[in-house]
Picture (cartoon, helix red, strand yellow):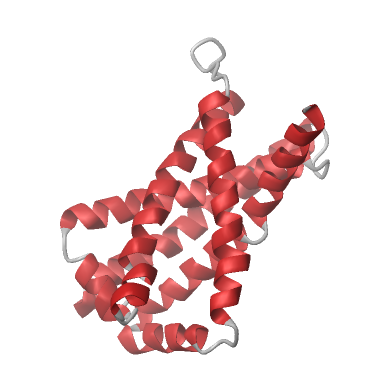
Length: 210
């Protein structure tokens, strides 16, 4: 039982980086092309959709790893013991936020997949700049996406800190302190990239001028 739990935790941790974390970064960078205008974004989307064996890649290298990471992550979130009230130190707070942002990210990703990939699969709706602009033509949806993006990037960045510790890469207080600063910077940079893309989609007239 203990060995099974250890394996599941390690697999959950690994999948959060490869491929789920890498996909998050790639997805946000692709979206960033929206800041250069609809044509630039649509060109990137069309290139991705032209990749050979795309359905196979999406199912086995994105959706199934993401599903496992999400399901086991929920198990961790609802069985973990949070001691923030008793021990309000920094890492304990980050531990709690990791679980909270995991739940928020799961809700956000599920809705985003429904609004984009499943709409294309079920109804043949084209995934492009206009689709995202229409989705975000609503202040509530802009706020929802902004919270989702920040939560997802925080979950990835803080998760990377935990990954490096649990896999024995950052050993000792100094290495872990430096890692904290590094992933804080990553969080700020990647969140900014995601939010700039969101602003471009929500303000089509400004896209290409950012």
